[in-house]
Image 1 (cartoon, one colour):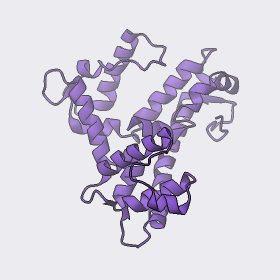
Image 2: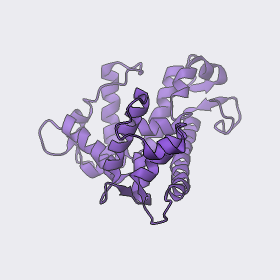
Image 3: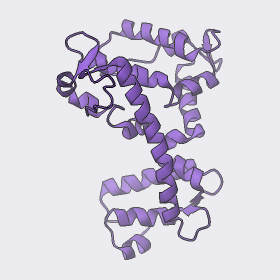
Image 4: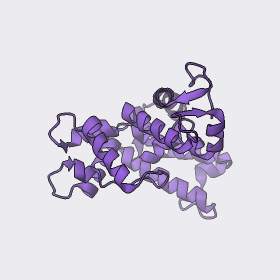
Length: 251
């Protein structure tokens, strides 16, 4: 949870800038590791070396990893009668994600589609779907853009200590500084795609500020080890510690 590498000047405290750089580095590390892992996992599952992983190849491996024997993994009933509900739900979720990732053949994925299946944050299609959902929910006048007022409708996260008015002011400022790149007062789909990219540094900056706002008890705009430990649940759930889960939850 506390990493001395994040404390660049070794003063025993984490500034907002240090937190921002650490979170951004962890996000970049997650993306690089995901690509490396995907190559090795895909290669291991592609038993017939045809450059594609079938649903059956993936699913048999999934069942083996869950502790089922080889015979059941390969010859189980299609409806998985008798399996725990949690395992059945995971299979259904996997299948839905599989079909979303498949561009041509729903029964097999190439290495890029397999990366999208395991890490949807790598997919432009997933990012576009997120942006389309945002526009659909917030675009009141139907012009396929978001004004700063429409963007500011997003409600505060339940963990934030800000009032709605403070939150709205920050959203408008963020819109002007980080989203509306051409200064026309509207956010286009392309601008929203750039903004919502998990690797956009604005997200690391925003999370760093929020972590300090929630844990800085003495008001020095920095975090000591004691302050971090006092709010350990917040940090354990943040991109500072649990990068992969945070990014996946966004998609």
